[in-house]
Image 1 (cartoon, rainbow, N blue to C red):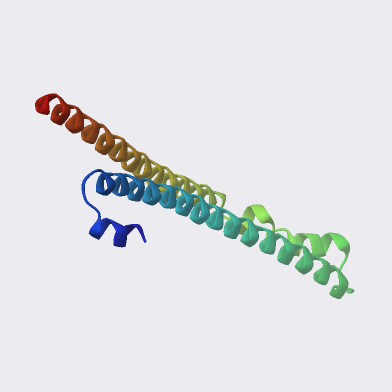
Image 2 (image 1 turned 180 degrees about the horizontal axis):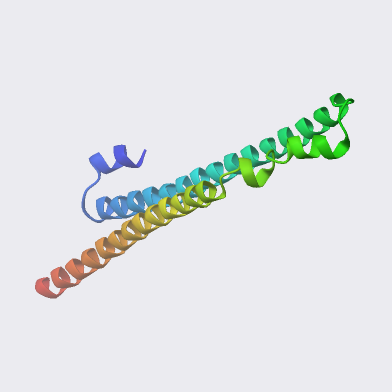
Amino acid sequence: ELRSQLKTATGSKRISLREELLRVVAQKARLQAELKVQAVKDEIAQAKENLQADITSTHQAMYAMAKELSESEVADLLSPYTMENLWDSQAEAKNLAEADAYQNRLMAFADKLDAAADNLIAADQEGAALFSAGSQ
C-alpha cells in the first residue's frame, strides 16, 4: 500500500511516505531476525530433546531385553550411548553463534534504515528551511 501511495505522492507527502516505508522495512527486518533465530534455537532444542529421549528409551529397552546379561554388562554395552558422545556441543554452539550473528546483522541493517529515515526527514526539514529563508 505504501508503495502505491508513493508512486502518486509529491512533495512533503512523498518524503513522509519514504520515511514510513524505510521504518516499516526496518521493523520487518527486526521481526524476521527474531523469528528466524528463535526458529533455529527451537529446532536445535527440539533435536536435543529428541536425542535425549531416544537415548533414554534405548537404555530402557536394552535393560528390558538383556535378561541373560548382568546389569553391569548392559551398562558397559550402553556406555557409549550418552548425550555427551552423541550430541555435538561444538556444532550446537557454532550454530547458535551463527544465528545470533545473523540476527545482529539484520538488526544493524534495520538501524541503518532507521538512520536513513532520520536523515531523509532532516534533509527535508533543512530544504524547507532554506526554501522559506530564500522566499522571504
